[in-house]
Length: 115
Length: 220
Image (cartoon, rainbow over all chains, first blue to last red; front, side):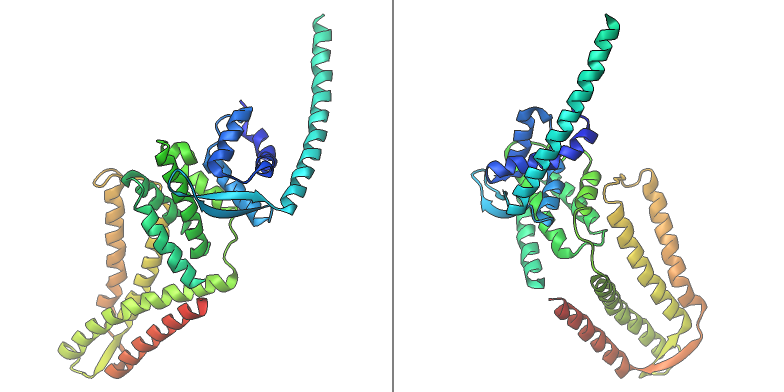
């Protein structure tokens, strides 16, 4: 299970990534995150992030009728949002490489000591 | 903006009726708690619309509200509040002025009725109304108490107490005691500060009403 602290820094970028592919809504974002292995992330966790992204001009929101009955708020990415997503991707890749190298060395070291 | 706010509130009221009784109660707690923060009423209505639709869609999927927004409603609200812009100083002042005007619009007629009774039966001063030092003190205490009660109810909307159990009695006894303390000056300090003509009381009431309406119009 991914800890909430670890999720905190990456969830915003991941949500931008999901919205960058197509216009989508809260429940679908939560389902997609779940399907990628993020675990159960409720709409209640996503909604404040969406509010922040909207406030910062990264996404826009429009209400439309849904097939389920109630209206749905659909979110789409703005040009600033796309730029932010690219920043996130490069930042995350750097972090991921750094962590991978560190873990490889650390775990490699442990294996060496065990031998 | 004000007209949009009213329209949105009306739409939200209709939307809320589509929720189950249990979810309506949860939504009320959420909205009441959100109103305890320095956020504009319009923004609260926008968030209310989003949350209502969220819960409503959850109901259609047979999901409980805690599955939709998480088990900690207070934490959910706190995270929303941190993303909403706080009221500007001007808006805060407007809100305060508006609520004080509204309070005095309610309290002044009550004072006028009690003062009329004193002018008729005790002071024999009609059409002049006596203004007692104690009555003025009580009016200010009651106005402050009303603000305090609203603050307490909104801040504790998620704390459930069963009536006639636990702290419920203590709360009501404390409230009764505070109310008595608020009314006490009007019984103790019976010195007449001055007399005011009945016509001026009506004029003051009309001025307060006009000021209240004006502050509402200016907010549009």
